[in-house]
Image (cartoon, rainbow, N blue to C red; front, top):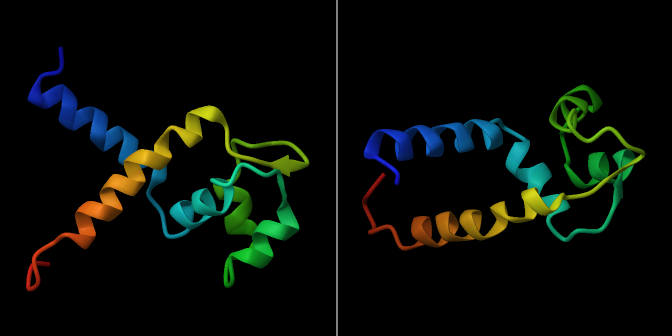
Length: 93
């Protein structure tokens, strides 16, 4: 059973995985599930350097990059976060 402290720690650790200027954009490019070549990803992420994209993809070391089942499991959580943000009362930060 989760305690408030362990739940907060788990969420914090999860957020660390996806933090960074480009990480979410890379993930959303990969969510459709089709394998992507490095050059395709770089073209679709306007303004990202090859070095930064390489850093973002460090865990995926193959000729093609695609979302793993574990990565796909993140999609509903991100959708919920987006819905939560869109429902924010006007005037709130």
